[in-house]
Picture 1 (cartoon, rainbow, N blue to C red):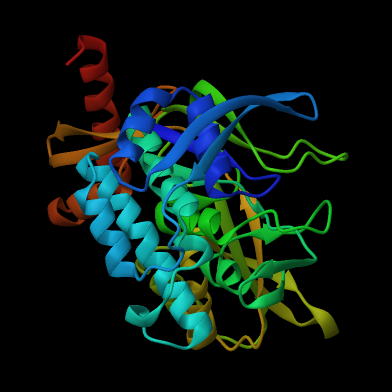
Picture 2 (cartoon, rainbow, N blue to C red):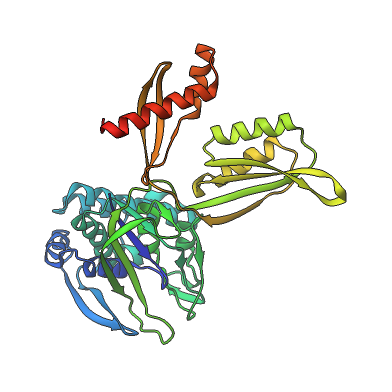
Length: 388
């Protein structure tokens, strides 16, 4: 599985994205040929430059059609008519659709009435389509991104002076981890935010991968304090499929019965929690209590928090992010005298029979659970020794 990880420590824009992907190995000639088929008449080039000592690629779009305002259907027709791979067309259309939805919500109008001005200009169309084409040229299958530096201060737009992040950018990045650091300028543009909102599947620490190439896309300005570049790391997944970034949801509870807490634990696990634990506490006023701790995928945090509120008596909870390290694992099956048992095997070779399978067979055959587990371990060890 080929992964692209964007390190947006200086924000992200469309041209920075294209520059970073070309710098990471996307064929500039093939990219230019594809973008020319859009029929914008723009002159396209990639310039080698330096930002605070970091060599980077700067993607330029010059000239093109004078018309600056387009509706979403017009842009989608341009993309569909261009000579692009189907996946690049699909992704570019997805980005513009997401951008249109954000603009419509910000301005309180139907998406069909949205005028794409700054983001509908020739350079932004080439940036978005170019980024999608470059990802296709690199064979990227999944996109991840760091927390995003959006910048601060204000930005001049066709709607006047607006705070950073601009309203459309803020809408696109809702629910994503953002922060502001550095000079008071716009570091993340609506175009860059739309690319991430539509295409990135996770935000946070870098996922496990073997780096194959690294690229840097230069922004317009050269700051004194940091290199104004977007870094793209391209690599193969190492096979650890579970999230390395998790959210911990926890609450101290002193007035729920064990039966209620046990049921809450079951519901949380059924709803997709990665783990749920109950730990005894001595709380204020010397009251015995329980710490309920849920480890969850970031996208599940609100749903699982709602279950904690509905199934327990707590009036408040804590949520914070944590990093998680997991070994790649696989499931094998072995035959025992009592039936088939799944065995979980780690990349280091450690293994454990699946508890639920062993419990079911122990009940069906009226034997001790530990006996079924021992038979499963013996069967797996024997299979491993014979290579079967």
